[in-house]
Image 1 (tube, rainbow, N blue to C red):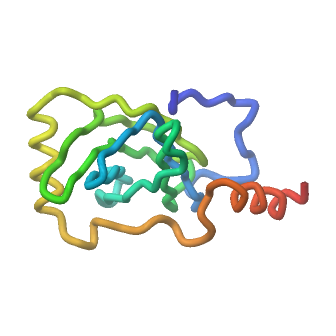
Image 2 (image 1 turned 90 degrees about the vertical axis):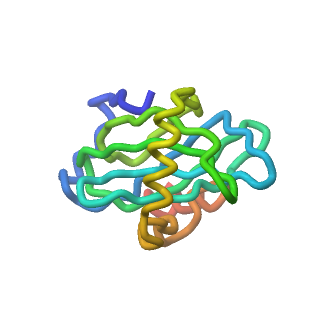
Amino acid sequence: MANKMNPLFQDSTVSSGANIRTQFELKKVFLTENEKMFLSLFDQREKKFIELKCLDHKTGTYSCSVWLKHKQEIGYQFFVKSDTEIKGVSEFKKGMAMYTILEVWQPDINISLLKELALEVASSPESAFIEEADGPNPTGEDFIENLIEKWGL
């Protein structure tokens, strides 16, 4: 779903390599009270971990946004983490940075993948865990107001 791009809707005003705010949105995620959803993102320079925030409990929609270079190659996967362990992980995907990347939560049952990610997260420095992109939260009414302001609608 995330890798399909319609060439008619590409933003010709943004050149490759320009900084854009990429919103990752993950659907059908249902967590317990002590679990958090994270994005593991590799953007050619380093690996980052960003916590996704819940947008809608009914649909299980979680989201985060990150500043990336437009059309640069990225690798990403999602994982669920409790206070003590990694509870679930999606398969690793490759794609290109664009404005929105939409995915559906599909945990991988590969135990070795889960253990590998757990070791990677445990050995990562605190600086690898970053906050979302600065600026307004890209959800709900704030998001619509920002679009209206940006495009003069």
